[in-house]
Amino acid sequence: MEKSPFEIQEQGWGEFEITVKIHFIDSSEKPVEILHFLKLFNDDKTSQAPRKPIISEQYDEIVFSEPTVILNSYNLGKLL
Image 1 (cartoon, one colour):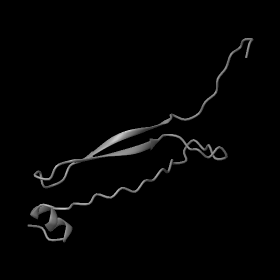
Image 2 (image 1 turned 90 degrees about the vertical axis):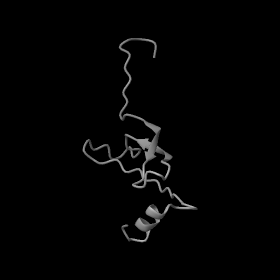
Image 3 (image 1 turned 180 degrees about the vertical axis):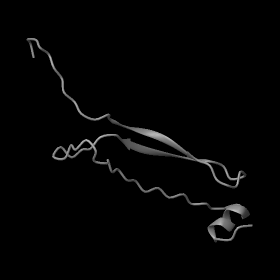
Image 4 (image 1 turned 30 degrees about the horizontal axis):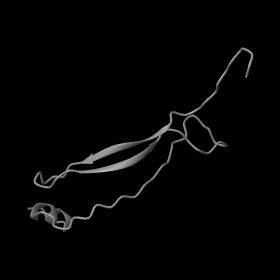
């Protein structure tokens, strides 16, 4: 592009990594931080409907090697 008018057209907001901090009911259990890739636009160029939801899923698993008694009671479905 060497002559005016200069114009750039883009759609979407972008995508970036965010930190999610999870706090547990049992305050003696330390909070856990995970990273999640947040997408604010649709990759599918054929369907740019303005009201179509953006679906971006990710599976994370938290394993407690030594859960507290309170947290373990919630895992077993028994409230203390």
